[in-house]
Length: 106
Image 1 (cartoon, rainbow, N blue to C red):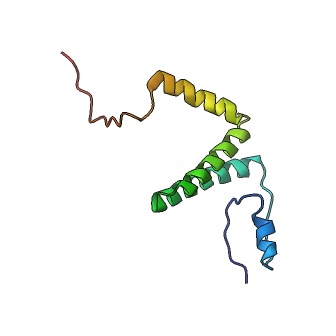
Image 2: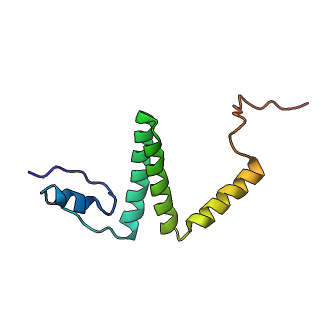
């Protein structure tokens, strides 16, 4: 009997499965399939974070974000530079500001 997962997994997962005496059934994805699977994986990891609110889940989210950046040929440094530029332009979230709305001035 085969347990179905149908999802992108980390590179060492097949090896871990084999070490438990099981046989992983895998395929290698083409570029389009890989990008789609990365986006599905990001959603999965975000959902897992909202279920547990654990730092480990945030680390998983980062891993997927880095993989998406690499797919788009953007380095971690370039991604961090972009994040820093946005931070300098618009700020972060340290002040905990919650925008209720915007009223037109007269």
